[in-house]
Length: 80
Image (cartoon, rainbow, N blue to C red):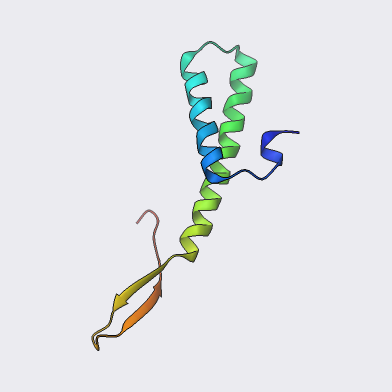
């Protein structure tokens, strides 16, 4: 079973991405293996971005209104 076929946490995906980067930067893997690692990295990045997008949608911003009461707003983030 491919590691990506099972549910992995954001932290596990990030750790695997760091491992892939180290292997690719070392240049020691043959071309076919390097391509496999690169493709796995792309899938992991997409998965991490999706998880971050989901978390961002759940974040709320608490702010104090003019009347002194706390209000809740949706977080609007991302590249502006």
